Amino acid sequence: MRYAMAIDTKKCVGCSDCVVACQTENNIPLGYARDWVTETINGVYPSLQLEFRSERCNHCDNTPCVRTCPTGASHVIEGGIVKVTHEKCIGCGACIQSCPYDARYSSPEGWVDKCTFCDHRLKDGQNPACVEVCPTHCMYFGDLDDSNSPVSKVMANRKWKVLAPEAGTSPQIFYLI
Amino acid sequence: MKEELIISGRMNPNIDPVLHLWHWEIPVYLFLGGLAAGLLFFAAFYVIRDEKDRFPTAVKIAPILAPIAIIIGLIALFLDLKHKLFFWRLYTVIRLESPMSWGAWVLMIITPLSFMWVGGFLKEVFPKIDLKKGFSSKLLKLVFKESEGEVNWKWKYNFLETFEKFIIFRRKELAWVILFYSLILGVYTGILLSAFNARPLWNTAILGPIFLVSGFSTAAASIMWMSKLPEEKKWFSKIDIMLIIIELFFILHLFMGFLAGPQVQVDAAALFWGGQFTVYFGLFVVILGLIMPAIFEVMELSGIHVHISIPAFLILFGGLIFRFVMVEAGQITRYLY
Image (tube, rainbow over all chains, first blue to last red; front, side):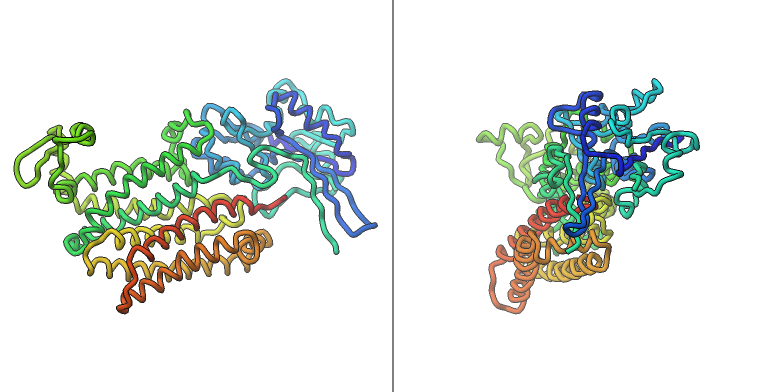
């Protein structure tokens, strides 16, 4: 099993509903965010191209955060989801320094926190909160090993890219272009 | 001009707008760790070569700084942790993939070894300790007691006396162990940073050797500053010149590697070449911290008197600034935005 997410940049309007849904679902402290929206503008005026991306932890296949963690607090669970055990985290910041996506933050309590793909919801057969609330249905979630999952189906028919592939982490959030 | 404008909605504290998670604690620790590694290396090296009477400062006196530096460094590391009360988790696992993990274990080993080294020479360095008067005598009496003879004190507990004899008897073996671990400690201060592949400035294998050489250079500077013997001063001055030349050579290689590397590393090098760290690095690290002290030391060796404290201070200062610059600048370099 390999959980992954595909996000359609042609459908995303940058409303940040995913951000609010995550903050609510996971009780994120004020001022922090596990996911966020990035807006890029390409080209020369008047010929400009706008792209919205909902970004989060890429739950990489090659995880520098797990590699550099000195206590084993950062770990990979079934389905390739990268998680942090709060009681093992000493707040040294090694994982934050090693993440090319800056997807982690040091929570006010001291431990490091990040996107979990809402694994508590997955257990109940639900989608992650961000996917569930998206008003344009631009996010597809599921198991890459299952050819009938929404993510596998959409990726079979669309061109996609990943962020900073040159960082060598083999990210698992795919942006449909 | 064709360009890309990126606007991110993320505003996590210490992460945005630029990563600034590690503050003064890490560079101070890296400096003190490198200094301690160098001091212990030279001490062990000259005991192994049977030259402890030729270089008494390096072998007996300067290493006193090592455990002090390590302890202050460890306090700094502890202060840096955000989830402090869980620090003991470091010692529940050995994770060879994580430099921070094996670094923590190396510190666990080398800290007591450095105390043992200093303890084994204490009677030679301080044969007379005043245990009669003053506030300090009360503290000293916790471990020492009065005695007769050339050395006017003894360890308060007999097992310490026995242990001291054992250390003196097995000093060469201890020196070999310390030599090995001091090299690891010295390299580790650089490897710690180079393991973070997300920061292009740090992600280069040459950082380990640079930090090792720089640490040894600060140690050689401390020894020549502390030494009272002209021959020892001169010898460590020569060692220091050699280390400075090697370090300059490594720094050149570092930037050659960056400029021939991917765009993110070209950008990282630009921070030092016209970017915001140009003055800190060029003036304080390279000119004041490496080139000037080397010139002063060469002048001193060729007979023009320069007080030894000037080059020694400059090297220590340059070494500290170097670590501050590397930690600060490294956190700015990145892959995305």
